[in-house]
Image 1 (cartoon, rainbow, N blue to C red):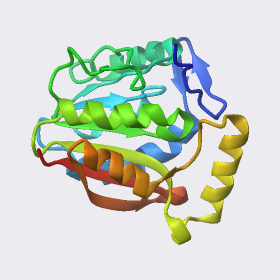
Image 2 (cartoon, rainbow, N blue to C red):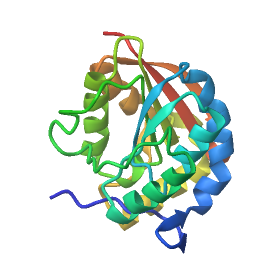
Image 3 (spheres, one colour):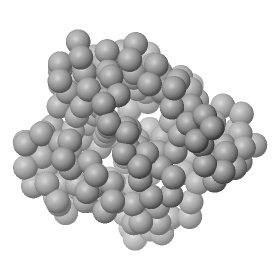
Image 4 (cartoon, rainbow, N blue to C red):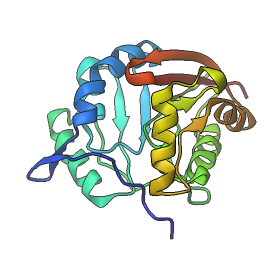
Amino acid sequence: MTKPPIHLENREKSGARLYSPTAGRNKAPIGNALSPYLPKDASVLEIASGTGEHAAHMCDIRPDISWQPTDIDPESRASQNVWRLDVPAQMRPSLSIDTAAPEWHGGLDRYDVVYCANMIHIAPWEAALGLAHGAGHILPVGGTMALYGPFKEGAETSESNLNFDANLKRRNPAWGVRNLSSVKHIFADAGLDLTVRAVMPAENRLLIFTKRM
């Protein structure tokens, strides 16, 4: 069985509702950057939704969209379902999804957008491979895969991301800040081409891939 990734922060809790300091800081800039790439009335599948705050925020700023949160962690899914109460017409009950599992996408609906934030660096590389493979099956031609987080970019890699990479590898050798070139490659193999690389706060990137076939 694949060991679930863990978050790297202290989260506050009110009942089953979790609050992430990271989500509190970055939900607005991510929302502003991501929203233009969500078609009108888009159906969005979020992988590794964490507390559920991003999902609720996106539904709040885009009342036309529907959002499917997921996670492999039961406590996170419980939190997502409480955040869902704020936007029940848009946000669906959370699903348990592990992208490292074979054919995890089987039986899922088609979605216009697949979104994943801050997962692939705290999960085995197999989870990134599975994410690309599954998104390639789920999305229609012209569909969008949005991926947010830190990346290594050769000589342009920030010192903070190099230090973060070393810290992650000390925690778990299977983790690490991923090379952007490798990420582009696995998504291209799944029929998804990188069309946007947006610079985000704290040396993060928002990558937009478009399904070509």
